[in-house]
Amino acid sequence: MTPYQMLLLPGDGIGPEVMAEAERLIGWVNDRGIARIETESDLVGGCAYDAHGEAISDATMARALAVDAVMLGAVGGPKWDGVAYDQRPEAGLLRLRKDLELFANLRPAICYPALADASALKRDRVEGLDIMIVRELTGGVYFGEPKTIVDLGNGQKRAVDTQVYETYEIERIASVAFELARKRKNLVHSAEKRNVMKTGVLWHEVVTKLHRERYSDVKLEHILADNCAMQLVRWPKQFDVIVTDNLFGDMLSDEAAMATGSLGMLPSASLGAADAAARRRALYEPVHGSAPYIAGKGIANPIATIASFAMCLRYSFDLAAAADQIEAAIARVLDQGLRTADISQDGCRTVSTREMGDAIVAALDTD
Ligand code: IPM
Ligand code: MG
Image (cartoon, rainbow, N blue to C red; front, side, top):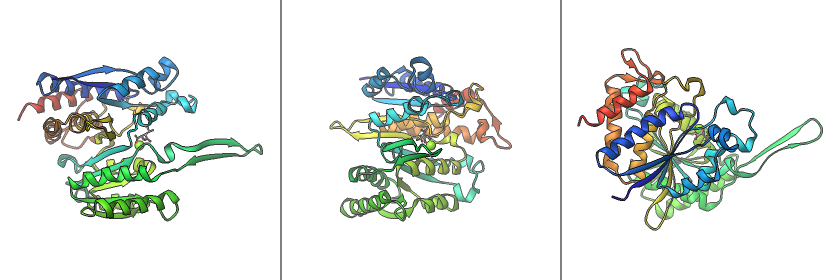
């Protein structure tokens, strides 16, 4: 068996705590002989800044480019609030996304049955919810130039961010959404703001053309991004796949996460284009951040990170059965009434990060 190489970047805040639990699942894959996964760990974010004065070093980037998959915990925290903009912890994550060309960010929002009452929305709105948000990740206002603050010299400053999209960027992310929809409920909502933004006008035009030419078997709905935000709260189950730009995707995925019970539940995969051997560069990370206010307490929810590893098995290593097993183990543990603090519920047992990891590992082998 050729071993898979993974780079683990636990990062800051609760990152190392949740990554430690995902590592136990990597151990399970190895112990059961499902695959051989070799891991190495490195620094990203504030901890990398403390060590090398930058949020990710060139050496770490080189390792990220060489491995089969990268897993990241979280970056950032108040400790680095005063750090120069280019060195801030988030810059490490953005460089990974950009330099690995991970243009497709998949953020599934699934409501586990046991958590329907932990959602901020009423049970009937979220029970059975299964949405895939496909966020463009290497373009738009996150990376567009100019991106500056200019001193106007009269006591005023002018800040500029630039939202830019080119046809190919929209085509390739929309293709990912249409392909995914074909394996799901065959419905894509494309969200933009064509009523005020030129990038929205182009987005709408490109998605419409691509749909007509290559994906007319998939049902396509165009939706304004603000309406999409509203509809996600009103009746989230109307959605299957939502495709949208970098900034709208950032916001809509946080919103969708709350429908599932907690931000601590949401995994993500960031994928590049497939090469000739159908291999893609990939980075897996929980959608939640570094949660500095609970870091070090051992109470963070490791489920999003464990589910991110399941996505790695599915999308990078073609091990769908093992991914299914991990996802089923998560569901089983939730059914047993175990909850970390973020999803605590009356009548359930509140457990630590480690205990949640223990329970998921134990539940894997009860089939
Ligand atoms: C996310 C995060 C990041 C983003 C931050 C940490 C830069 O919010 O992955 O959703 O804005 O993309
Ligand atoms: Mg975000």
